[in-house]
Length: 106
Image (tube, rainbow, N blue to C red; front, side):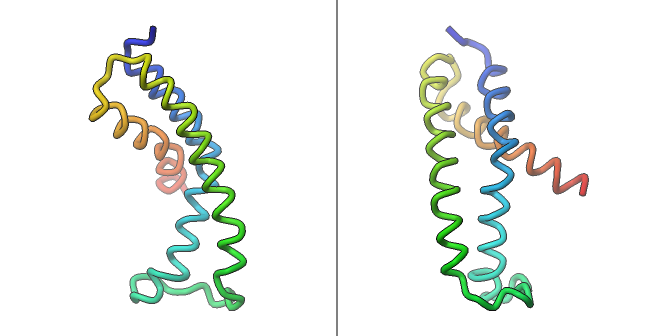
């Protein structure tokens, strides 16, 4: 039985490496449509085909990644002694860690 927080941390950091793609897709979509409509970001000037094409890509990619993330974390959550109020934020932050490292270093 996994009792320490290092196993969920390691699993979620490893899941965060391919997770860079769905996170980037979500940011690209948000920055070109809802955030741009609110005036918070500038729309990509060459993106004039609309957002439907992006939605056809984003929904399956993010959906499959979310399913994979959930299937990996649900059994792991039961095997650890971390409380759910600590486990889930740790898992989300560990998953976002590779993306944050890329943002900081690039």
